Length: 275
Image (cartoon, rainbow, N blue to C red):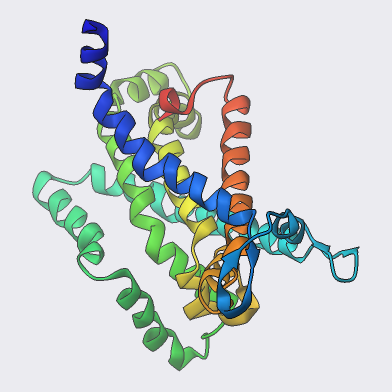
C-alpha cells in the first residue's frame, strides 16, 4: 500500500500526463486508421486495412502498387536533412561566436536569437513571402529551405551554445602545447565536449522539419509537398481521417526508426545519455 502511495505521489502525475496526452491520442488515431471513410467526410465501419494499404502504395481499386507516399516521405527526409545541414553549417560557428562574447553582448545576441519566438510562427512565415517576392523565389524549393533554416536555426543554436558554455578550454591549450595543429586540437579537445549539444540541436531541428507543413505549403507550393502536407490535407480538405491517421503513423514510424538507428550507431547508448 505504501509503495502504491509513493508511486502515485512521485511517478503518478507524469504517467497520468503521458497516458492522457500521448498514449490515449495515439490509440485513438490508430483506431481511426482502421475505420472506413463514409459520405460527407464521416468515418464508420467496417474495420479495414485499406488506409494502411494506401499508405504503402497499394491501390485497392486497380490492385496495383503506386508508392507515391514513400516517394514523398523520401523527399521529406532529404529536405529535412539538408535543412538540418544548413543549420549546422550556420549555427555551430554562431554558437561559438555568441559564447565567446562579453557578458553584455552575449545577452544581447541571445535576445536577438529568441526575439522571433515573440511573434506567431505563421505570421513570420508569411513575412518571408514579402521578402522573397521581389526576387521571384516564391514558391520554390529555395524559399522552402530559407524558411526552414529561419524557423529551426534557434532550436539548433541554443543547445549547442549551452554545451559551448561548459567547454574546458584548458584542454585545447594542452593539445596545442603537445604539438597538435589548431584543427586537430579543436577536434580532439573541444568538439567532443560540444557533441551532446550538437546531437540535441540536430534532433530538435530534423524531427520538426520532417513533419512540418506550414513552411512548405506557404513558401514551396505544390512542388515541394512534404509528408506533413499530405497528413494535413487528409484531415482538412480531403476529410479522410482514416487515411490521414495511417499517414501519421508512417511519419512517426520514420522518426522512431531514425532515432533507433542513431542510438544503435552511437554504441548502444540511450538518447537520454547522449543528450
